[in-house]
Image (cartoon, rainbow, N blue to C red):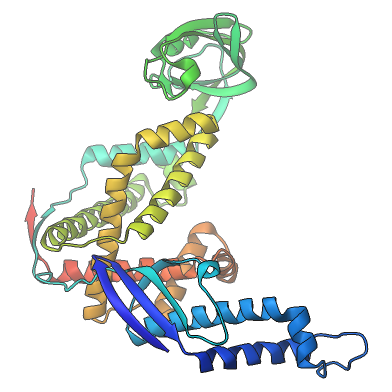
Length: 429
């Protein structure tokens, strides 16, 4: 087999391959032997069918299999020998390649490759880190959030701020009913939304309502609403209130602290302050890592394989469409919204891919890899967070084909941490 490489530009090459006739005949003979050993025909013992009969019955399929096998193996061998890191599938159609036993098999294909990156100036990057501090306000909010986890919804007479109503809801455009739901739970807050739009009119209408009351409000939808049927419309929201509930939060005192198995309220505060400090410091360090990576991306010209970028974009768009549909947007409207936001999301995807390739190149140069112990440790952490058995979590990851993604994520985390540890960090207020 002979092969030649032609550079077509950033991340794209053409491979020309020629397979000699002796290799073609050997492969065809191999395929006929496979057929002979596996086929059963009347009047012949298995493995003893004459070649002419096999050629008459299976000649076309044998040659087709031989051609595909020769092409696939020659591509794999070329990529390995030339140390080409291909991304995506080769751009070629095997059916259009001429195949004959008496002349060489010639074909060419284009392949997109990983960008060649020579990392530079990545040690000692100068960045700033915001000084973290847990304020009294932070602690107060954390105490309130913790108390809310023990809060209970209890019956109430009249709807007040942040109360919940259980109601039958309708949404109409004139006489046309757009929505009808029974026994819907709605929290009556200032940021309440109708059809994904702020609806302060609904908030005001529901305040003061009692069980059995009917309330209506007119909501004006914007001209650029994501749902075509609602653009610029004035719709009528109606609610028939069945129940009113108030979120009964526990009083933050010594008794409450002891119900959480703490010695005192001060002990709760100490633990919360420790957690908040850890969270804030972790967020600040992530900010440092992002700043380092932004600096390095400016120093490196990283072309992107178009096919890989297209594949990433398509996958991202499908996830975005599904998310919109789960929030009640029609499939048609979800498609229009995603298309409208395509340019912005593409920019983020390009940055994500460039970051991935740059981190990979730095990791390769610095020989930063992930050990199986580190993988097991992360699976243990995930299992603890989900309150699951580690074996079950690993099994699910393997079943969904996500183990390689987990290893890739862990490796990128290690490389980011390495860059941060080598950076020149100035702490600022």
